Image 1 (tube, rainbow, N blue to C red):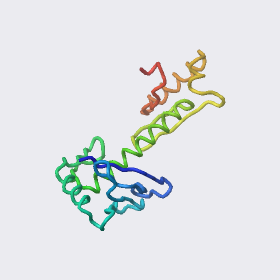
Image 2: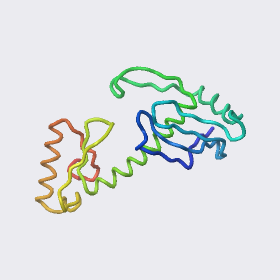
Image 3: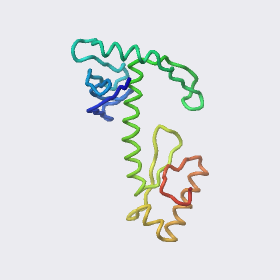
Image 4: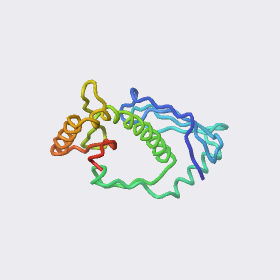
Length: 170
């Protein structure tokens, strides 16, 4: 069973506690419904096209119940707990995948100009040098030394360097 989101639209500005989004819901390549979340902490809503609860939606709900639970760990998520998989959680995971893909693309573009660093998976910071890209700095010895010094300083402060375009980190 293949569950997909298409015509996905998200709005970070309106996300307060949960991801604010709207999308069409597909089952095995066929549009069967819609899903959304207003971003204010409430549950993700979904419904079928023909009726409020179409047979396709019911099949997807039953299928999701057979999937492994979602396991959170203290090391990664701050606490240990498990949640049974539901269609709502499955949709939320698909939404997060879409948002992660979008964020990765943005970060890859930012890496061309900025040194990107973080302490957690919940966000990152950037530093730049006026008039210089990361590539231009790597092409000069002074620029490379400046980058290496800044990277070392940030790492000593406990930051993770996110850039994948720094050859001296590989």
